[in-house]
Length: 327
Image (spheres, rainbow, N blue to C red):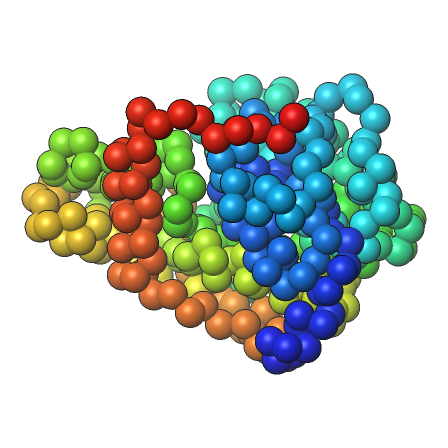
């Protein structure tokens, strides 16, 4: 594994593109790359992400507004980049179920457009997801676990992976498929479990969970971004699929209890509704760790505390003017 100084040297002035750059994970990845000295082109259509997410690095990046599922030509930055991180997606499974045609346009056709625009031989990291595994046959789940398309999201991600391998073979792309488990942290919004619990606690003074039993593998967003940087720093994982997760299994009940405690000891009610989706998830991350030396640094308690602090700041700033865009 490269030490920090060597990693900085590897990334200094290296041209990188991040699609989905204004989103939750994308914005943290952009910040991590800028900190390493990379020249980053941040690509997004601002349909889900916001300019405010990139405010801290707005003077250090090249902003490119582009819709991967639209009709406009691909930006030149994609063909110039040495490394492309393809994160842009319709990433919410519920949104994919509501509009499966849009999910296909974005997650499959959009992925094809991104890959075709990459220069021959470039390094590409494609973000897939653990939901492509479906219900676990064994825990922890490793990269050889069978994939099961159980909904439009997992179907389109599996198709995106297949497109990636076809383009890699045809054009010499040095591709890594990263199957990410449950990343959480500041800037995550929507109906994902961590922000939902935090908002519920802040708004109502109590927490209600549908069922305490399901488990997930949670990784703090800064750790996920650091892992993606490590994956792309060299070619040891080129041509490979790799899982990205903490390796720790946490039940929704345990998660809710920690959030409740951090919010001052709020009551937690278990509604005991039937479980939908996978009952358990746990990542086998040994391939990633052995190849790169990466380890998660932020434990769940500290990550939740940082995330709650961000939500509290957002609530306090709710009436403040919106961040300026990049136009």
